[in-house]
Image (tube, one colour):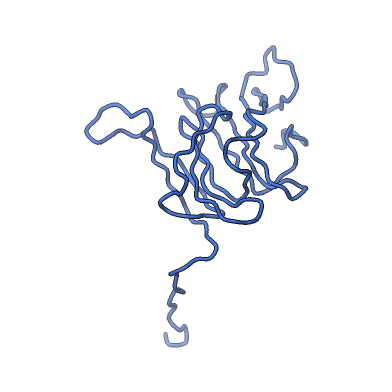
Length: 185
């Protein structure tokens, strides 16, 4: 169902939208949504971070609230300009923190940095150049917190990030896939 025809942020593409689930479960009040970065209709890139809170509609009034059944989404801009460069075609993931990985800048140059934030406003650079290198258009998921080997408790910052796909300009050392001739079979 379409909850709202207008969002509080400017129209954009090549952005990331992710969900942060509360400790207690899925789809309940307290869950957070995040909208990060992207290419604006003007062609420029954004480093904005918007957070949406799922809250009960009972007794709620205010702006930037969208109806979603018995819950509503209350949006607030965490920052107009995150510490990471404005970007598009990047990956984002959520564990107990938000993660931003790679993408491309306003000139189309690929990025290889990794950032994390616990609140969407303050960001920490984790790696200026990730071990997987430059990636444009990847996807990512966060697994965690993970338990360090031999421990019964998860570590505070032990999050596994899995990066899928993406490409870099220009790929080097990549050979075409050898495909057998279909007529020979």
